[in-house]
Amino acid sequence: MAQFSYRARRRSGEVVNGVLDVPDRSAALMQIERLGLFPVAVDAAKGAGPGKQEAAGERRLAPRIMMPQAVRDFLQRQRKPKLQELATFTQQLSNLLQSGMPLTVALNSMTHLESKGISADVSKQLKQDVMEGRSLSDAMAKQPVVFSDLYVNMVRAGEQSGALVEVLQRLSQHYERFAEVQQKFVSALVYPAVVACVGLVIIIFFMTYMLPKFLSIFQGMNVALPFATQVLVNISDFFSNPAYLLIMALSVVAVAILYVRYKSTDAGRRAIDGWKMKAPVVGKVVKLNLYGQFARTLATLLENGVPVLSALKITEQIIPNRIFKEAIAKTREDVTDGKTIAQPLARSKIFPQLMIDLLKIGEETGDVPGALKNVANTYENELSIALRVMTNLIEPAMIIVMALFVGFLLFSVLSAMFAVTANIAR
Image 1 (cartoon, one colour):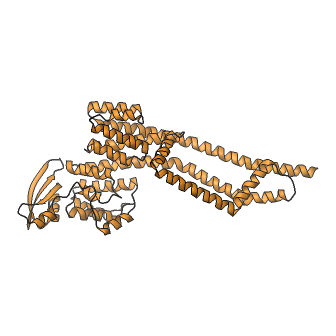
Image 2 (cartoon, rainbow, N blue to C red):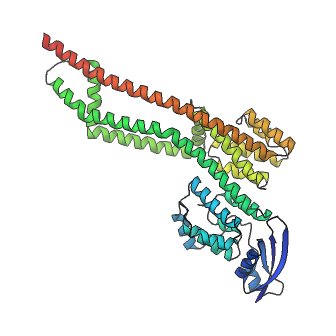
Image 3 (cartoon, one colour):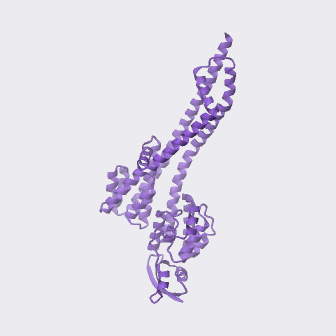
């Protein structure tokens, strides 16, 4: 038997210190969890050998820990989970811990629960790391493909405050909201995408199969075809000629490669992100989504005790738009100098005045997370409306385009028929 001193927290947040006589560190952790406590640090008591102290020393606050090759190979196979999958995983773990299960037992149960998109090996590795003495946040930090910096830092804040269950519940709600926004985007684009695909298939079928049959009849009569019909003939020849199709396919591939290369540069990424924000109709949707994502992420981090500078850095990493990233980075530099968040955000001229005003009120009342949540709710509601407007504009626009093309086809065929009829009448 060996002695281990520990520091842990009750669910209320109260710090508890004590000493246990147990065979090893894993047994000490299990004993602490049986007492209903969240372990913060477990060390070999004074008098233990140097080797034991090193093996049982405190291991925490290591955002990225070196891992065995086998674990690295596994993480390369694990794909990044979807937002809804991560929300489900987090909710399941929260429910198990809320029921009174010790952390290691809860992680063991997670290996048997169905979590679509997250392999059971993830929970097994988490359990193994916790049994070896790492905190849950450090164990999750070893799996960056699954758990982002946002996730890890919030879990770490929950461990330090003794409110891990509550933090996991907030994390689940956070990812649920983002999954809902993502689903709204998908729903708004499904119908236009289906219409576009069906229309394209019909056009290709008509141009490559039906139209040549009509044109062969007209051309056999040695009649000069009208201009519109001749244009249609040229288009049909293009689609029917494998060499032309190969040239078109190679051109598309070349344009795609040039676009990817341009996007990979800082200037290219910034230009493309700027264009997205200024594009008609779509630009408003992009900006509203960025406003909501920024406010929701920052509010979630601050609400769970993450320091403001760390919260801004994590938010900067999560936001996909380069122009927004630069504005957040500049804000973080100014906050380091002792300024408030609202002032540097206003100087960036990226964020709307409503967000700035609400942030100022939050800073004056001491409730910045609450103000940011109000901002997020406001822009998420506006985003829903903007998506409906975008969908309502796209649908008639696509119908008009299809109608114009079909009308051109009919005009071309009918004009050729009139030309043939006139020739026969002579």
